[in-house]
Image (cartoon, rainbow, N blue to C red; front, side, top):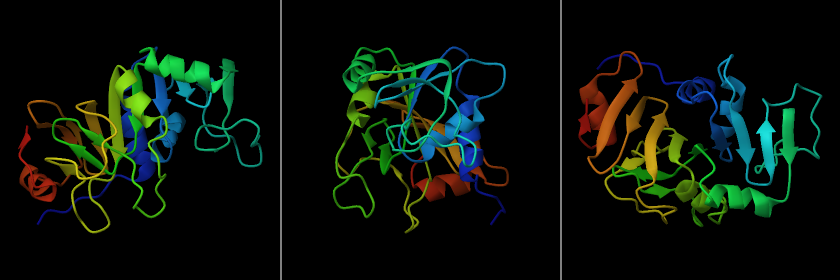
Length: 214
């Protein structure tokens, strides 16, 4: 068995941020995806959107500088970059549904090899018991990416042949970023983009339980 180190939450967020192109309008979902805002590479402009009606978010505020009248959809305090704005959430959803977002980054309970997304549940402890804006984001964004741990606490793969959780969207996920590897997914199945050092392709396939094209 080879030796490998999982990506930390911040390392995973940094990995997601590396793939965001200059000039993109991006929505970061509740939970882990919000960390991506702290790792946008220097020298590029990325406009961050939140479904509660914010455009132009910056990184998390410094300790002691939080303004709880300025929060994202997950009720976390945020900063606003020069030129940023806030507005009614109906306008924010119109942006989502109108195809004006280049990328959304969401968490997930399961993603199928063909890109079906399941990211809400009424039975999971601590889960938000409603789909919220994720359905609009998953279908409305030009690209939907998922950021999650590869395995559940029970050691089961969150990448599956077919989702068993309630579906958020069908065939909408294009890329899956995990603590062990990054994948492309779609009609042809899973394709490996990269993996952590020391983890063999065979070991990764065994963890996922599905074939992965190199």
